[in-house]
Every structure is written in structure tokens, then in C-alpha cells.
Amino acid sequence: MDLSSLIAPNRVVCGLEGGSKKRTLELIATHIASSLPTLEGEEIFRRLMARERLGSTGIGQGIAIPHCRLENCTGSIGALFKLKTPLPFDAIDDAPVDLIFALIVPEEANDSHLQTLRSLAELFSNTNYLQGLRKATTDGELYDNALTTL
Image 1 (cartoon, rainbow, N blue to C red):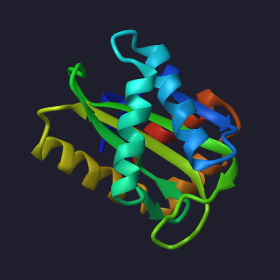
Image 2: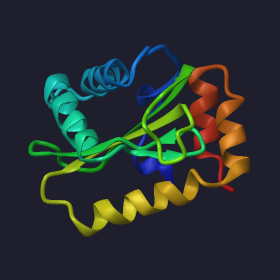
Image 3: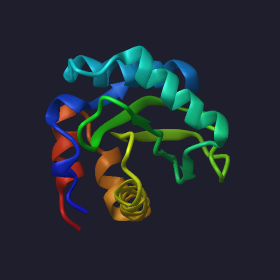
Image 4: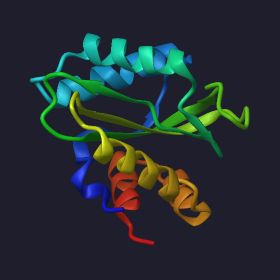
């Protein structure tokens, strides 16, 4: 999967300090909205939380892929965060999460949204890829490592 179509350097953060799942999702929503003025942080947060209430987006191995649909979103938007301190996320393996890839898609996205989620889950199941992300110490390094092809 080519992440360059989803993320931009200003939507990659290394060392995010969230403290809790809810607070982390709030910070992620605010960060995404700050880079895209057509989106509202409160609405992103509300939608991400609504999706989490349906079931955790923690997919195991310290990875979470919170995602939601937004009415005024015109294309798929991704953001990558490496947490300063891993936190409980109700993941399927009960492991704390340290890498979060947030995905926002247009309200009408159906098949493409599901395909993107599948591709992300596959990408984040690669141990070597995860090691590259986890060794990053700066936003730029995290971005570069995220775009490294396997």
C-alpha cells in the first residue's frame, strides 16, 4: 500500500502524549483538523468515539486504526501517530497501543473504505515495518519510515 496518498508530513506525529484513549483520540482529531481547515476537530472526535463504541479499533501488536466517515470530507485522509507512552486501547490482544493510524473517509465511501482498512491492517501486520516505525524518534523519521516500501 502506498501511504503517500493518505498521509502528509504535517499529519505524522512522533511522541504524542495522550494519557488515555479518549484524550488521545481528541488530540488526534484536533491535529487532523488543524491541517485541514474544512474539517472540524469536534466532529472528527465525535465520529471517532462513536466508532470506538461499536468496538475497539485496536487490531493487536500495539496498533490501532481508528476511523470514521465525515460528510464534508472529499477524499480519504490518514494520519500517523507514535505515542510517547503506550496506552490501553481495548485491543483484540489486550496489548497497549503505541502506533495509531487514523483514517477519515467521505460519508459515501463504501468499498474503497473497506479496502483501505484491509490494506492498512495488512501493512501493520508486518513486523519489520513496525520495527521501522517504532525506531523513529522524530516526525520526519516517522513519516519517512512509514513511506518505506517493504
